[in-house]
Length: 199
Image (tube, rainbow, N blue to C red):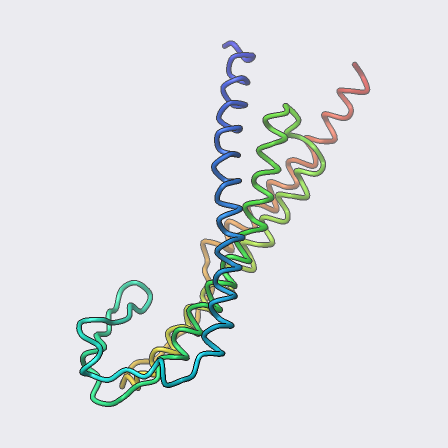
Protein backbone atom coordinates (compact mmCIF):
# COMPACT_ATOMS: atom_id res chain seq x y z
CA UNK A 1 0.00 0.00 0.00
CA UNK A 2 1.26 3.47 -0.93
CA UNK A 3 0.83 5.31 2.38
CA UNK A 4 2.04 8.59 0.92
CA UNK A 5 -0.68 8.67 -1.74
CA UNK A 6 -3.27 7.59 0.83
CA UNK A 7 -2.23 10.43 3.11
CA UNK A 8 -2.52 12.87 0.22
CA UNK A 9 -6.08 11.67 -0.39
CA UNK A 10 -6.94 12.07 3.30
CA UNK A 11 -5.48 15.58 3.30
CA UNK A 12 -7.49 16.49 0.19
CA UNK A 13 -10.72 15.10 1.66
CA UNK A 14 -10.01 16.87 4.94
CA UNK A 15 -9.49 20.16 3.14
CA UNK A 16 -12.73 19.82 1.15
CA UNK A 17 -14.71 18.87 4.23
CA UNK A 18 -13.14 21.72 6.18
CA UNK A 19 -14.30 24.20 3.51
CA UNK A 20 -17.86 22.84 3.69
CA UNK A 21 -18.00 22.83 7.50
CA UNK A 22 -16.47 26.30 7.63
CA UNK A 23 -19.25 27.55 5.35
CA UNK A 24 -21.85 25.92 7.64
CA UNK A 25 -20.08 27.50 10.63
CA UNK A 26 -20.57 31.01 9.26
CA UNK A 27 -24.11 30.22 8.15
CA UNK A 28 -24.87 29.06 11.71
CA UNK A 29 -23.48 32.31 13.15
CA UNK A 30 -25.61 34.40 10.76
CA UNK A 31 -28.68 32.22 11.45
CA UNK A 32 -28.19 32.59 15.22
CA UNK A 33 -28.00 36.38 14.89
CA UNK A 34 -31.05 36.49 12.59
CA UNK A 35 -33.04 34.27 14.97
CA UNK A 36 -32.11 36.44 17.95
CA UNK A 37 -33.06 39.64 16.11
CA UNK A 38 -36.35 38.02 15.02
CA UNK A 39 -37.08 37.09 18.64
CA UNK A 40 -36.49 40.69 19.78
CA UNK A 41 -38.64 42.07 16.94
CA UNK A 42 -41.48 39.67 17.78
CA UNK A 43 -41.38 40.81 21.41
CA UNK A 44 -41.64 44.47 20.31
CA UNK A 45 -44.43 43.97 17.76
CA UNK A 46 -47.94 44.48 19.21
CA UNK A 47 -49.88 41.31 20.05
CA UNK A 48 -52.69 42.29 17.70
CA UNK A 49 -50.48 41.47 14.69
CA UNK A 50 -50.34 37.81 15.75
CA UNK A 51 -54.05 37.23 16.31
CA UNK A 52 -55.52 34.72 13.87
CA UNK A 53 -59.05 33.48 13.41
CA UNK A 54 -60.62 30.68 11.44
CA UNK A 55 -61.36 33.00 8.53
CA UNK A 56 -57.74 34.18 8.24
CA UNK A 57 -55.88 30.88 8.57
CA UNK A 58 -56.69 29.26 5.23
CA UNK A 59 -54.91 25.90 5.09
CA UNK A 60 -51.96 26.89 7.28
CA UNK A 61 -50.87 24.88 10.29
CA UNK A 62 -48.09 23.70 12.56
CA UNK A 63 -46.05 20.52 12.66
CA UNK A 64 -45.31 19.00 16.06
CA UNK A 65 -42.01 17.09 16.04
CA UNK A 66 -42.27 16.79 12.26
CA UNK A 67 -44.90 14.07 12.59
CA UNK A 68 -48.20 15.59 13.73
CA UNK A 69 -49.75 18.43 11.76
CA UNK A 70 -52.33 20.67 13.37
CA UNK A 71 -54.45 22.66 10.91
CA UNK A 72 -55.19 26.20 12.06
CA UNK A 73 -58.45 26.20 10.11
CA UNK A 74 -59.79 23.88 12.83
CA UNK A 75 -59.72 26.62 15.48
CA UNK A 76 -63.08 28.00 16.59
CA UNK A 77 -61.85 31.19 18.27
CA UNK A 78 -59.28 33.92 17.86
CA UNK A 79 -55.76 32.83 18.84
CA UNK A 80 -52.70 34.95 19.63
CA UNK A 81 -49.79 33.08 18.05
CA UNK A 82 -47.09 35.44 19.36
CA UNK A 83 -45.89 32.88 21.92
CA UNK A 84 -45.50 30.27 19.19
CA UNK A 85 -43.36 32.49 16.97
CA UNK A 86 -41.25 33.74 19.87
CA UNK A 87 -40.70 30.11 20.95
CA UNK A 88 -39.58 29.16 17.44
CA UNK A 89 -37.05 32.00 17.26
CA UNK A 90 -35.56 31.52 20.74
CA UNK A 91 -35.23 27.76 20.19
CA UNK A 92 -33.63 28.36 16.79
CA UNK A 93 -31.15 30.73 18.42
CA UNK A 94 -30.33 28.15 21.10
CA UNK A 95 -29.76 25.37 18.57
CA UNK A 96 -27.55 27.52 16.32
CA UNK A 97 -25.54 28.69 19.34
CA UNK A 98 -25.03 25.02 20.24
CA UNK A 99 -24.09 23.99 16.70
CA UNK A 100 -21.63 26.86 16.07
CA UNK A 101 -18.85 25.77 18.49
CA UNK A 102 -19.32 22.15 17.38
CA UNK A 103 -18.65 23.09 13.76
CA UNK A 104 -15.68 25.24 14.78
CA UNK A 105 -14.03 22.38 16.69
CA UNK A 106 -14.54 20.03 13.72
CA UNK A 107 -12.97 22.59 11.36
CA UNK A 108 -9.93 22.91 13.62
CA UNK A 109 -9.55 19.12 13.80
CA UNK A 110 -9.72 18.83 10.02
CA UNK A 111 -7.14 21.60 9.69
CA UNK A 112 -4.62 19.62 11.78
CA UNK A 113 -5.25 16.54 9.63
CA UNK A 114 -4.60 18.65 6.53
CA UNK A 115 -1.35 19.83 8.16
CA UNK A 116 -0.37 16.21 8.92
CA UNK A 117 -0.58 16.80 12.71
CA UNK A 118 -3.68 14.80 13.70
CA UNK A 119 -2.29 13.64 17.06
CA UNK A 120 -1.96 17.14 18.45
CA UNK A 121 -2.84 17.48 22.14
CA UNK A 122 -5.18 20.29 21.08
CA UNK A 123 -7.18 17.78 19.07
CA UNK A 124 -7.76 15.68 22.18
CA UNK A 125 -9.19 18.78 23.88
CA UNK A 126 -11.28 19.62 20.83
CA UNK A 127 -12.74 16.13 20.68
CA UNK A 128 -13.58 16.40 24.40
CA UNK A 129 -15.34 19.68 23.63
CA UNK A 130 -17.33 17.98 20.87
CA UNK A 131 -18.34 15.28 23.35
CA UNK A 132 -19.44 17.90 25.88
CA UNK A 133 -21.52 19.73 23.26
CA UNK A 134 -23.19 16.45 22.24
CA UNK A 135 -24.02 15.69 25.88
CA UNK A 136 -25.50 19.16 26.34
CA UNK A 137 -27.45 18.71 23.11
CA UNK A 138 -28.87 15.40 24.35
CA UNK A 139 -30.72 17.38 27.05
CA UNK A 140 -31.24 20.80 25.47
CA UNK A 141 -32.63 19.67 22.10
CA UNK A 142 -35.38 17.42 23.58
CA UNK A 143 -36.14 20.15 26.15
CA UNK A 144 -36.53 22.71 23.36
CA UNK A 145 -38.84 20.35 21.47
CA UNK A 146 -41.00 19.91 24.57
CA UNK A 147 -41.03 23.68 25.12
CA UNK A 148 -42.08 24.27 21.51
CA UNK A 149 -44.79 21.60 21.60
CA UNK A 150 -46.12 22.92 24.92
CA UNK A 151 -46.26 26.43 23.48
CA UNK A 152 -48.32 25.24 20.50
CA UNK A 153 -50.61 23.07 22.64
CA UNK A 154 -51.28 25.80 25.21
CA UNK A 155 -51.71 28.58 22.65
CA UNK A 156 -54.09 26.63 20.43
CA UNK A 157 -55.76 24.97 23.44
CA UNK A 158 -55.41 21.51 21.90
CA UNK A 159 -57.26 19.00 24.04
CA UNK A 160 -56.08 15.55 25.21
CA UNK A 161 -52.48 16.12 24.11
CA UNK A 162 -49.49 16.21 26.44
CA UNK A 163 -45.71 16.39 26.11
CA UNK A 164 -43.08 13.98 27.36
CA UNK A 165 -39.41 14.83 27.97
CA UNK A 166 -36.77 12.20 27.34
CA UNK A 167 -33.06 12.66 26.68
CA UNK A 168 -31.58 11.79 23.29
CA UNK A 169 -29.71 8.53 23.94
CA UNK A 170 -27.96 8.65 20.56
CA UNK A 171 -26.34 11.99 21.40
CA UNK A 172 -25.35 10.74 24.87
CA UNK A 173 -23.72 7.66 23.32
CA UNK A 174 -21.96 9.81 20.70
CA UNK A 175 -20.78 12.18 23.44
CA UNK A 176 -19.22 9.39 25.50
CA UNK A 177 -17.64 7.96 22.36
CA UNK A 178 -16.01 11.35 21.79
CA UNK A 179 -14.56 11.27 25.32
CA UNK A 180 -13.09 7.82 24.64
CA UNK A 181 -11.73 9.03 21.29
CA UNK A 182 -10.21 12.02 23.10
CA UNK A 183 -8.29 9.62 25.33
CA UNK A 184 -7.03 7.75 22.28
CA UNK A 185 -5.80 11.02 20.76
CA UNK A 186 -4.06 11.95 24.01
CA UNK A 187 -2.21 8.66 23.92
CA UNK A 188 -1.45 9.17 20.23
CA UNK A 189 -0.08 12.62 21.06
CA UNK A 190 2.17 11.07 23.71
CA UNK A 191 3.47 8.43 21.27
CA UNK A 192 4.02 11.08 18.58
CA UNK A 193 6.01 13.18 21.07
CA UNK A 194 8.14 10.19 22.06
CA UNK A 195 8.76 9.30 18.43
CA UNK A 196 9.75 12.87 17.51
CA UNK A 197 12.21 13.02 20.41
CA UNK A 198 13.72 9.66 19.44
CA UNK A 199 14.18 10.71 15.83
